[in-house]
Length: 367
Ligand code: MUC
Ligand code: MG
Image 1: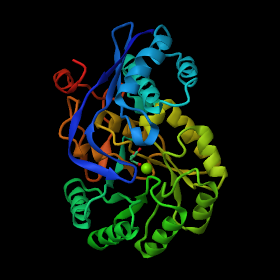
Image 2: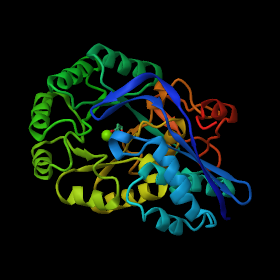
Image 3: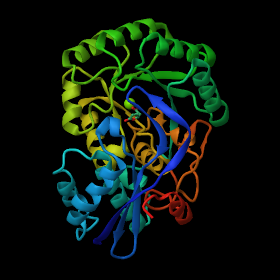
């Protein structure tokens, strides 16, 4: 079943409130909807979220690389020739979310064509994941109120707290306020988006030693090779590599180097195919994983839960699946719903969701 066209459609949905973290902030979901059209009229969809401060991709660069580099090479290939599609995409080192969206839209076509959910095709382990919510920078009382609301309204009991500010006490204070307000039973972990030095990170972890943090993610830049190895060796809180280790080669280097002890998998940047490669590598190396969030919309979140629920190891921990709730609207016909602290894989073939044409017409920015 040949691919006949690939579209990259920019759209913009404002956030109700911005998400702030050490490397940037998001006010608008200025994503790109990728549609892969197959010859029998089946259309697969996925979304690419540009994160300029992380990977250097922008909405314009995603559109350009899809339209001018990837689409001309993959049109004419069959959706079942996935290794050949990846041989084309993998020639390019960068552009992770553009490549991931193409991969996931191809999987969506395959699932729709076969009448089977992608999550079942990938592994079919379970039909849901527990949800972890990311809490961005704000005054302590605002961060606490957000976590309490997520717990009360959606049953979420796992929180990833953004850290990496200076002075370090801003963040250690916020984490302490969250622990005091939420009690001992919620899971708290931290993500620094490379904001601190090794010594600042070490001091922060020492100051928070009594808070029962379960994970610490990207507290300092990955290029500070010895500092990172030193930090990882001296803490009992597992170190998660996120943006420093996206491809299998980087994952191998980080883990063998002792610079990380766990890996964040994000379908937004490695699609389903690349995420499975990273997952299987981690299983082979005996490394835990966590399903991360690239500040996805609902389509991206549906991809994350489809992948996470498909496998035993990705569904063990809570996945980061809730930040789409900060968006003022979305593109899907049926909104995702988190309840009892869980998100179910959408039913139906492929990724299991449909884009509402009226919403797309309203939010697309190219017409
Ligand atoms: C995260 O886990 O780091 C913030 C920046 C980015 O690239 O992803 C988000 C969340
Ligand atoms: Mg992160």
